[in-house]
Length: 341
Ligand SMILES: Nc1nc2c(ncn2[C@@H]2O[C@H](COP(=O)(O)OP(=O)(O)O)[C@@H](O)[C@H]2O)c(=O)[nH]1
Ligand SMILES: [Mg+2]
Image 1: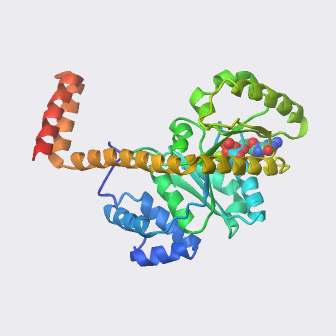
Image 2: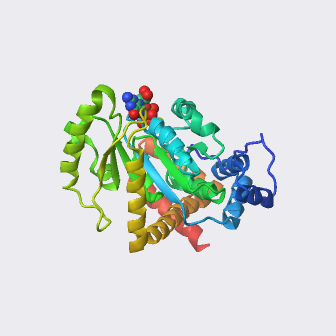
Image 3: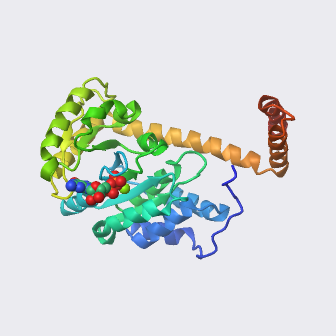
């Protein structure tokens, strides 16, 4: 709770009217897209209000594909996205890259590192690269990234790539905002398949053994076989899909055709079964539910007496004057009084 300051206002930029943003987005203006994402991420209520109006007014095409890229730090996600993104541009696409980084507010270093690494993509006029600062946001780390995705799509980007930092919540949360997930793996890591969290394996639709180049190529081939064997034990939600394990190298730009074909095959499969749309609407429901809880929490805790009571009880617990559960009972009475009013 401490990190949320509803009175925080970023005074550095003037805010224009909604039409300016909506028209700019529909014209594919990347500068205005950036401004809109900043509004979405803003803690200022007035800016959030404009963001909400923009989101209500924009047209978001459904012909897009949202791809999640997961994998432990150092596996090569950013390098892969840079090279694969350039490949997609060559195929006539307009990719957009968003990064979910729950630690971004406390650790700007990792984000800036990624940004410089995607130097070709971030300066290409057919691409858009944006690290989203989702740290400490109430209602899930992916909550605002989802809105950023919609803004990118309204601006004409047809492939949205979401990179996670590869640790903690970001790994599983990405599944709530994407259509398909790629899990990047290192050559040789096949021995510790056990070490990869089951949830992360199960969320993956395509496995990519990255860095399959130079002296590691042989090892990568063995790793591929290990994973092919291991994933037979996992059940995939999509009927008729068996997760491919693909060798790739970002430095040698190898494996991209096969990966892109696998993505397209998967999309066709879920379009045919209807899962593509039901998945997106279920994500919308989940988002709504998450944001509703967050909103409720914010509204209640912004009442000054609630905050005072909360701090009073927290202090009492600290001084061992009351137990946590007794304090909770007291808070429940306070909440009930608010609801009845
Ligand atoms: N040999 C080789 N090295 C790679 C490849 N992709 C990434 N790397 C290296 O792996 C390191 C981590 O890459 P990075 O993209 O930052 O990983 P991330 O933390 O998953 O985003 C960097 O030193 C890259 O140069 C690849 O395809 N082949
Ligand atoms: Mg990275």
